[in-house]
Length: 291
Image (tube, rainbow, N blue to C red; front, side, top):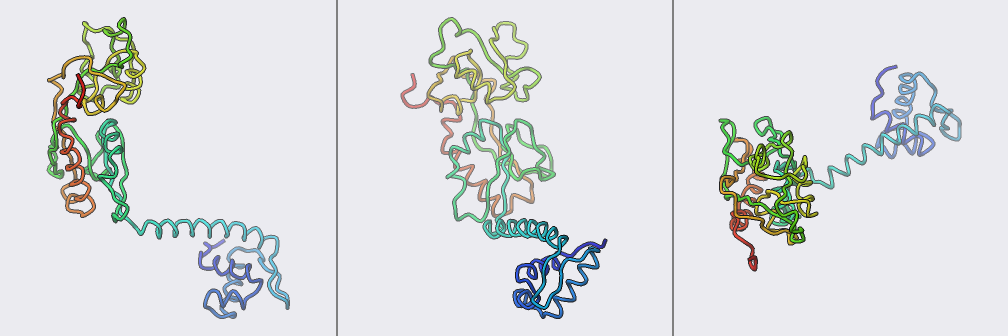
């Protein structure tokens, strides 16, 4: 069997809907003779009769009805793609790679990054791993170090402070116990800070920052969080002073070529404006009213 052309299937659908050549030809802006020839060619390509040709019109055979069901599914799929493209207006997508807490902060302030009339969309890639910006896995990466690749550019934003946090409801008996990212899952300096320390009592481990946060909130023990995450949670309180050795700069990293794209440049400018406006929060200054 030869490959079936989608244009022929569209003609077939029109003939099936109208029950003949005349209506199908009118719908497809063609001639009845041309539609008739194309249907004969389609039958030869498939190797099965699709129509019973009567004076009253074209009636589908069993094979014709089977093909109709499949062609209608294809038509629906094609229409779905067309509707998607039309609805999106073929908008570009700016992908942002960020760790759990930065992605959480950006999502909470999404209205500062994107507006309904923007000619682009934003896609978050939340991961503690470093996606490959040089090979276009994402357009923007939020990093804690300046890149060393000549293909990448970077923009320094704010300093990020870390501190131990605990649940406000944590019972006194558990205030000296810790929760942390397990050593085999620790990929950041803050996650590795407790690793190998003999002076701490571990209550539990987690494999993701989100689960670590859940354990802290549940009162299992205290744990290390970036201050911009811990201080925004009303159920948490500081369990000690800032861990000075974990203070680091935040960088926005992008490909040298992509940074000149209008959509990428717009998102970068808005991200810089957003985090700069919250520099005190990122830097570990206590929220108003915090003792």
